[in-house]
Image 1 (cartoon, rainbow, N blue to C red):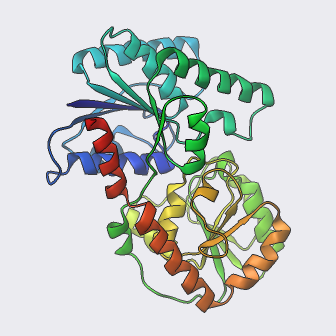
Image 2 (cartoon, rainbow, N blue to C red):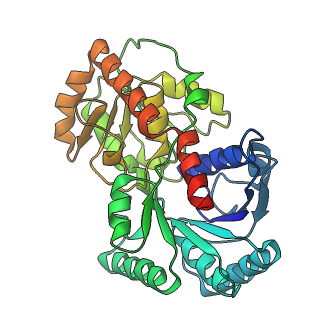
Length: 358
């Protein structure tokens, strides 16, 4: 069976998802019933052909095609033609589209194959849920999602519980949660205690992560240390003197060791699909405080693995509770158990494999 994955937004959590996916479907221990091809774009910052080739499984076929995030009739037309030609050569049985742009371009390209191909689509966070765009743009994205689902069909595979509830109102939907490589991440766990409470986040400094809010929180709590593991185009919004920006850490070992060094994970996102970084922090037994949005609230169990908040003033109480190392340890153990129960990438990819084979 030939399966082709198409993704434009190959960065951040989606990049980790695809690296793990390539490892799973390229693993010689798994049945060789699936021939996997990943068609991706290297347009996103921090993504290069060399990086993908070095980090993805050699047993997975990799094809780089130029796709852009914004709507561009000329570039989108070119991408559809290139996608069609690649799909024609591969002759896939299944096409799995990831994120909104690939969902549009891939469906059009697949249509012109004029053959019966199973279509799956994972939004990884619907574009119409973004909070940095106007109501008109949100409505436009919503119409596109619903129209393409109605015209081209296929099965939506939601990566989180709330996304699943939304997807069921758009078309045929299944739930297969995002997961992480628990065994690998656990290699970097070791107990420690910081002299001063240290609060961190992992990811690109972009609008989606809301660096302004992270900075405001640090200013509100000057007696704590804050760390942003990563970098990005909005790093100029990080001005608080008690925030350290690590810059790009290319070695995953260093990333996890740095993530392990914090006491509390703080997710300030404006929108999410199902954030991989939060799961990684939970595997390292970090209690999580996160904005009360779709994605975050599908992971965190309030008063058990962390807290959800809508306003900064709520954090006073949450930080006070989590200042106690024993309380953090209990929350951390609960977080790790929740990941074993729901967010193990191997178990979740097995569900995906079973769905392909139906």
